[in-house]
Length: 254
Image (tube, rainbow, N blue to C red; front, side, top):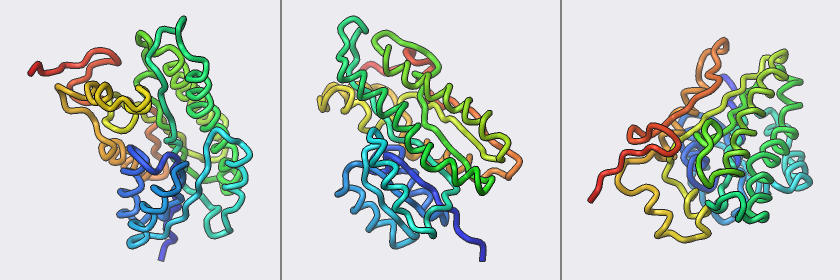
């Protein structure tokens, strides 16, 4: 019997990460679920352990030492990671750059860019040694188009796009696939975080049209990682039908 592939998912406790964990579990992947919220990790693991093998790691991707320690703690059974999903990310604030919060800027750059690098740095050497693996970085339409008041968030996602392209070039000699998926409006906890817990303001972002859901992106991820060995879906932008660009969205007026 063929060994089941191992997928390592950051930001697994909500949104795209959680939806992907559920879908991959149903499709015979072993999962390493990562996140900061241990209670949610434990709850998700208990559910998915009924159908697949699960390992959980609780750390903040911003902390390089904790990332390294957590990944090094994996035993030999779990170290051969086949798929890395760099999903952890956030947006903080929606302010013009001249009035933006430097704390918000730090949070976005530390999680969206440095966190992705820290996790990848710990996992890529094993893929290089085995000359096999697939890295998927979750970007954003904000990494393709800059919009008003998006400034630093857009910059962080443009960086994800550039890093993905750089990874693809540098890892090419080792047969490692690298993919970027850039979603438009996805209804997750994203806007609640951006608006500092203001659920009413966050909900208005998704009113008047049907947004993407975490499960939509999970479907793309599963499709991507199950292509034949000679095929890589390198770069994808996915939008809800109502969205034409970062700022153009057809909303029904009630």
